[in-house]
Length: 198
Image (cartoon, rainbow, N blue to C red; front, top):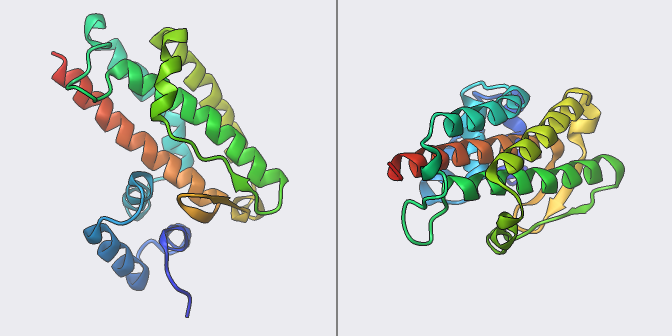
């Protein structure tokens, strides 16, 4: 019998979102607080029947819409000490997209590569290099490319695996689902940051 882990569970949910054994394991893991935020959110997205690539395609417009509706003076205001402002969040998703572009290409061109992991907090030192508008443009352009690449892949490509130090081995389809989960978490964080700044 296969030992379940988040990567295996998320992979299974693509083909069988209602599988009781898989969902039982995931619900217990969620209750125990295991898994990364992206993995936990990916589970929610998959059991709800969302198309991961469509979600990935929608995120830049969702971010842009939230920022367009916000008071420009509030975009740089952090909701509390040691919390990220909307500006920080936009820069982070742009940086994370660049990292995932490398991860995806490594998985597609190498045999089970070790894929790049990073601590995002020290990267905040670079956020002053560009405006949030430029960071949003960078994110939007890179995400369009990610989505175009993802839509060009076949099942064999999506089955390819990489190994990430803090998540272990996972298929490319799972990496994309976790990226969509990461998006949802940061969209919620962006809404909260903008609301708190009012």
